[in-house]
Length: 307
Image (cartoon, rainbow, N blue to C red; front, side):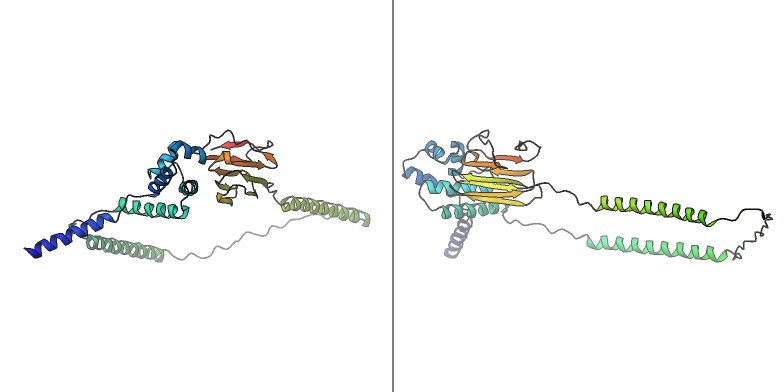
């Protein structure tokens, strides 16, 4: 009885250890504790980070929707951690670990006894061999019949053209005038002029074909960051011109083939110029991601296309 009870206790401990590996704690717990320690409310933090209170509540409750990209979530967590004075790298590491645990939780299936399934490979292979053998026999029979049919045909002699030579009796005009040297020179000059005109036409066509295709002129974009913001810039050749979280006070310029696609995590935190003209970003609500394209029409800013 003692051994049985020890085995049951060991089994319970093993089960509890397995279930304890998938922890529900996330970075939101640390952020909430740090905010409360500083006596800050959710609206206070949302105003400080220029985000909506609903986003702050999602971060603290470890609930992440598919509408916010993973890179934006990491940027928000870093900014939130700096605002409440805790280690941002630790917060991002906990978030990354929890994402992995969530994948394990979704795909974890308790082991069950599965009845063995009879393999049908043997029967499939048998049918495949039978069909292959029948196909080979059919090809051999058709080839033998074609060979036999060709051997029955008599060899026909080669057709010889026996068209008679037609004699043409033509009277020679002995009174015809001889061709003068001047006439021969005129004919030769006419032929030379025709050849020269053909050469000129060929050269013109060759020059038109050899002209290179004109490439579109690159467009210039200049970014100035008032606050931290995540940025992604891709031109029409699918070349990534810029990507990542940019800190406040930073300025940089990129150049690419229009139209250029731009994604801004916090559009109100960026000042953007397109071909030395200021782009109006106040049309995008604060705290929401802005996606737009520059350079899709021939106007000054080549139009701003909102995705």
